[in-house]
Length: 192
View 1 (tube, rainbow, N blue to C red):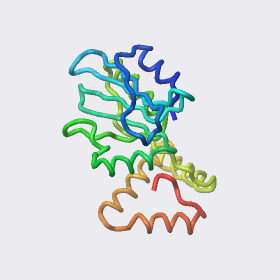
View 2: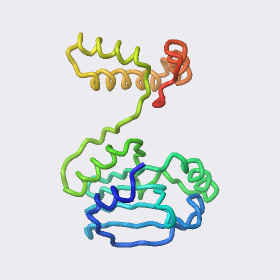
View 3: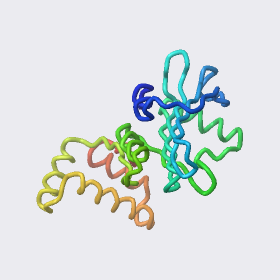
């Protein structure tokens, strides 16, 4: 999870607002800081953290220029956050009207998007997904990528897109894909 220091550097130490976090899912010491560039069609960044031990619970990036919102929630607190949102009947997926959060899992993905948003630069809306695969599968994929004259990253992107398309079309189910991975490699990739 991104740290307080990393977030402060992302916003260039520019804090525009702060307040207690009103929900209990992150505990009684949860505090929220915002950094807004002051433009309605600009951007803002938010961090929710513990004032005692600096645990970061959640970070958000709001790109008002492109109507995009990104968020990372500390994995240790995701369940509590979802449970409280349900109890309060709040759609935590919604960032603002007609815009949902894209949840990110990789710190560098969040950081790169924030840097580009802050600089007003174009950036990829693709998301980075952590995938834990056995060495044998990675070797097979590297050989196949070499044979196709593409990068290993491109090979995995294509394979994951193909798998998602198969699940979306109903050709296979998520459970079938997970069972196949477990049968073949003794593990289930985190991304499925």
